Length: 505
Ligand code: ISL
Ligand code: CA
Image (cartoon, rainbow, N blue to C red; front, side):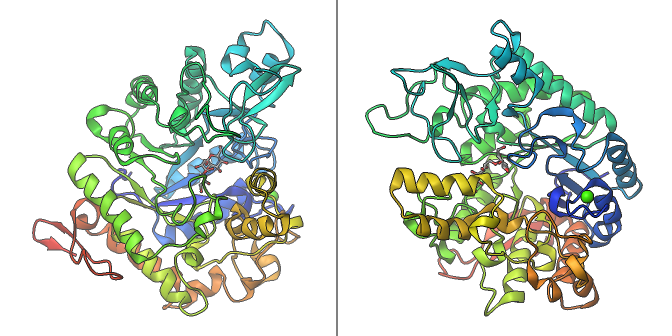
């Protein structure tokens, strides 16, 4: 067992990790078959993106039953087997806790919808419309209104996809239900949770219009992000759930966490959670409306990376908060191309950024495939699977009057599908991921970029990651030592020192 400051976490997005029964969809038995690969890489912990029952409108982030495994991925027995096989190898598991919303297919929501006196209506935000319009002007994260119509003049809040209904955390029964889910999986032996958009669970009371004088949908920003009660709920969750178990690891995900929010969530004195992601790197070059706001042309330079690094590292030194560091995940194009240059410097890009991520203070996360240098695949519009991309392209067209061909080009560049193509295990047919056509297009470069070849080549990206992980695991200074930047004013070189006592890197 390894504590969170000494963990090295590997994110698995199960649908594209490894298919065991050759239906083209990754699954739990597929994960089990690759545990030795992960053990060999040296990781200590897996973060499993959602594997619960789901209609898959948002690939598992729309949960229809927290207590059931998506049959495409296997059964609860398969999951128990995964737990056991991980335990045998001293690998921890973090599950994804998606508690800001459920799928509209969840039995709570269905009851709320079908039965006017259902107690579950208060599990969600149902509200009357205003002047034949939505109850307020909030913009959804995925484009368009945050409200979905129930009937003529009644709506429910859906801050992400229209089939992801926001849960009302004011209702203490909702909180109890979520705590029960957490206990169910902790009792099975998982180590903890990565908490999906957990900074979104406190909505501004009364749900008022954002910027009421402006026209069109407005991003609700501080009306739904990092509200004061997020802290209240996390403290309660800690008291009722985490504190009852030994060594639980918790990680908050949520876009637009400010430095102060993050420090407050993770300061151990506050008894909330252990660590937090920030998105300052992944949102570099975005306009104020987020990923699909192309008005800054996704441009940035080395100084931007330096100042973001400085800001977060220094904050942790000063405020006793703690972050997890990542470069790629299932929500963004792969970083090797976003921050690096694969035409001129393929290996160098992968290695330089890996070195950066592993030498920082904060727990390093790896996203499946980055350790073998997988790249983005520019999928044609008709091949897209990502709801966010499909809807945002439409929203760019409708709201900002961007011509569709241009909107699609932007979508192709930033779509989450880029990071969701199947993991390239070998140069065999279907990249050794499956023996049939996968659910999403496979990157044809698997003949040259694949795990099997990487493992054999001592100079490969994979072997570089392996060395970095080993280095980090065996050197306390790299895990808990201080951070000090050395050449602050240099325009392009980032240089810093990690130290603990005499030990300096
Ligand atoms: O992708 C983003 C920024 O690049 C974010 O806006 C992202 O949508 C946000 O951080 C929330 O992501 C999480 O919750 C979503 C789900 O679709 C994502 O996959 C998940 O990581 C809703 O559950
Ligand atoms: Ca399968």
